[in-house]
Length: 398
Ligand SMILES: Cc1ncc(COP(=O)(O)O)c(C=O)c1O
Image (tube, rainbow, N blue to C red; front, side):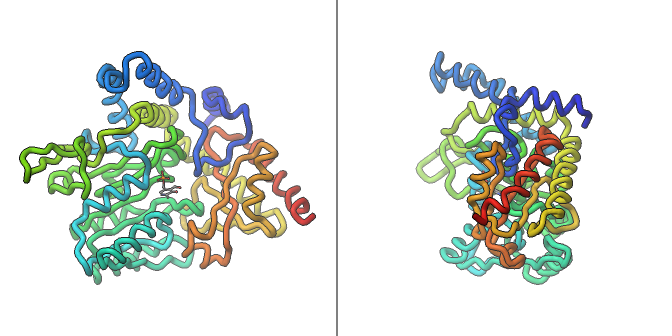
């Protein structure tokens, strides 16, 4: 990405004037087109009323679907808008016809809420969760996962592409290929990878893929989406709790699911945020996702090298491929450091052990500072954050 392109990204991002935003794995700064799309729709709701505004702007809403489909390499009609990634993930899980004794196969780095849902399924329905071991270099041992899948024939395989708690990138593609061959549904959590790196649902072999808008995609809070593969729709997979947008009530005994991915949607949600998500997808595509990936990873690399030179700092990111999420254990650091950095205009976040029990217990830490740059950040911002960390250490010992 050229300096002029970075300059343009910053021009489009009013938030950069208000601080150093290195919390893109939490919620990124939204660019102007996203804000405009939301504001225009809200204004239309003010003028016309909520239902009438949605009708009047139906074409734009359709465009939002097309933009997200383009972002994922997904065919028309395969994306459902939902409130957030967790809702999307739960909707997908609810579509699997689990029976007691069935197994879910997953990884040690899957998102905390996903693990909580597996625990709940264990308790309520007697579903067993199998967790594939990690490889010595970090991230799931794909060979061991496939071996478990072959031997245990799970009802579902679920995998988080990029965890919330480290810079690891797991590789879903070989798992997806296996699942396709053996006809096992494959659920991918792409919450942190969407907008951060190119995604192609076909190449990943995903049956379902859940994501949120507010992170690297730079969309609004309170909006997410779920991809459902056309074969899964054709086979009649439906969410356990459809509503009147997801299905038609035909007779007392009969419900007819919507033919496309909308069967996973609910009637009521914010069209303004859907339009904001569509604008974010379009903005990412126009910017170039490879360029976003390369620049944000380069900034993350600069952070990791800087952290390596800070006494008492240990970078926690491990794996064959690392992304734009940097996590570190710093001697004496607690969640209070995030507040201290914020007072200096630098926004980061803290990941508690409870968000990454398996990984952080393995690493022997009870939390980590997470610093997540995006392509719109600058080298100077990264260096300023590193300088702040160097000076913060003695402060905290007072
Ligand atoms: C990997 C991953 N999956 C899922 C989620 C949940 O996303 P949401 O809060 O939009 O439901 C997060 C949020 O941090 C995440 O990092």
